[in-house]
Length: 406
Figure 1: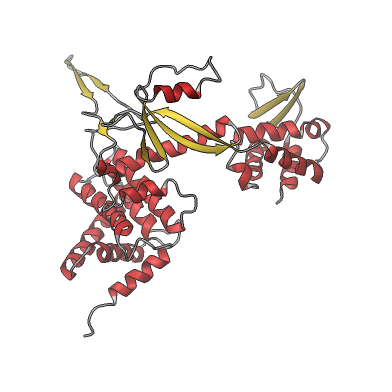
Figure 2: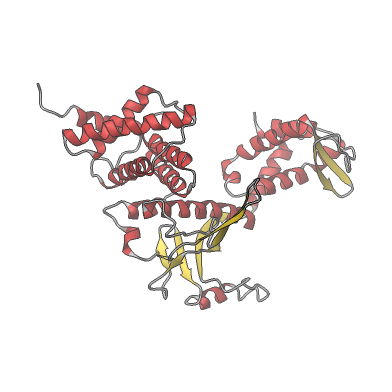
């Protein structure tokens, strides 16, 4: 369905009655002057679906406008069609698209506070892939220069550290939306690099908890009273400019490099997605959920088709592949394959029977296997140029059958 058909579908779904104060219907209303455009009950659901399809119809518009901005511009552009209940013409749609694309694409520098870090050499900004981290006090002149043209602009406070992402968009809100997606990714990458689930450190841009109290109040039916209070806080900030975070022999430098590339191949995209799932796993307080997320990271790397159900055959394929990648001898590979199969047995019990008996040792083993697989893929000369899961399996098959003849 082309954009003209979708726009006319939206026009036909709209009503112009006054629904203000109505509680017997579900509705969403837009007002233009004295006119009100409404989508009611099941038409509201159909409208939201049609709007999403319209937004998806042009990738160059989608990546530079927010859905909310696109919605307001679309309804405003076709206001006359809504009020007169007439269908739009092809030239109306063409002028709408032309108008949106006429707005220039700009590069926005988006800054947010970053917590839980320290820079040992703060006088120069720290570059980590597409991210730049500043100590505010050391770079105050840099930030003041940015606000010279807007003297009324002030920082809400004097932040200690700021992180920057440059986003290409057509308006401020889209730039912030894009940057926040990357700030979320930054948190997950950093958890992956730290390498273990720990409360010792906590680095956050959008999801920083910091110091907090946990209190409980307990009363028995015999009149007994008690309380419990614990204090949780990260023990120390992470020295973010430590060479550890950009080591090449662990692939960390490569992971940061992927954040700047716009043309990642399909397998590199999978690697980054697996990194993010590992980061989510390490941040998850539920042992069962954390275990499943670590398993998902492996499945992203090894399943040929997205959405495949993990059958015994796929489980065997994953186990064997991990053994071939990480093991350096026959005995090591047999032990690894057996260990992964055992861990996937636990995954199956969590998913299918709600098993909650997950030990820290089992979780840490699965987490370390997932991280080690990524590190090996990124640092091995045989694997670091893989561009698809199929390509990976071709290489592993050659390794598997490269033994001596019987």
